[in-house]
Length: 360
Image 1: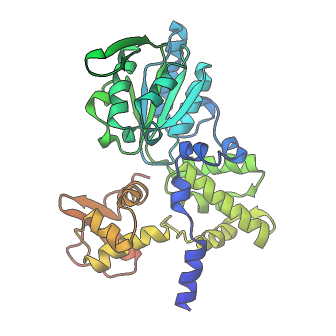
Image 2: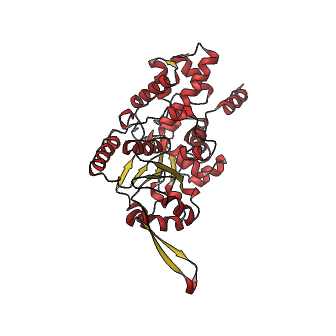
Image 3: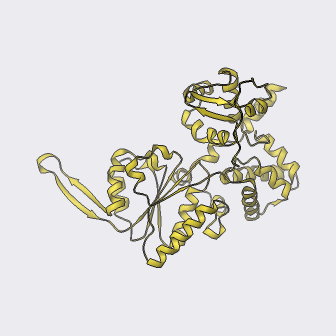
């Protein structure tokens, strides 16, 4: 029976990687579905949560429009799914300018960057997702372009080398990163506006779910919204993905309306427990508790045990577990807290660290 339940969970488990897949990756692949676009707020006044970020952006945008100048360069940093791409698109609409999308890894050569920057008009926004993954040669071209709005292009080599300085229109670069520590100092210092996006509160997620349900024309009561919001990891993108899966379940197994009971059954089928932990989250904690006696354990060792990419664990799994107090980082590795043991129904050792207060 236990093996059958595990097989069912593996088959229907919530795909965390898909939920956190960057919007720019979706745009570059099959394209963002119209339904996905419709769930995103289009204006600052529609945006729920991140009040301090929204207030500061509102002031910056109004001031820039009053001066009839483009915005200063902006960087949004924080875990995946918190709205960095959405905010970039909102800024372009509020400023009434075009936005051009790219990802750091896609800008492989300097020529790729030159072709984009030389096509920008005054005030246009150039958005780079995963900007921390820019190749060094591209970053060396981008930094002076951000500061001087000019690019030095070298023709030929050796004794015949010639330099041509190409002037650029005054543009705004918006970068998004989940790994701000990987940004070089010269690049970071050229951003005039740096904003950190944090996890959303349950009340904010509940409002986002209510808004999305209205757009999707799905009937949902307060209890149904609460069950989804408490499992959404403080992340709007995850909340919307879960809402769609619960909607599917309610249309097939219920009368199409989502209440607390329907949401619980649907999310259990997806492998998301009452605290929002997915199967991968629980495997991560089980590896530390079982194989490494509670830790400390290095991320590469844990990744090898789970046969997962260490970057996936660092970007998609660890932030939530750290915020919720299931995990702590030490100089020697990761350690499971008393809360993690109790969640796994394992008796914690006397020296297990106490969980830190959750920020959600």
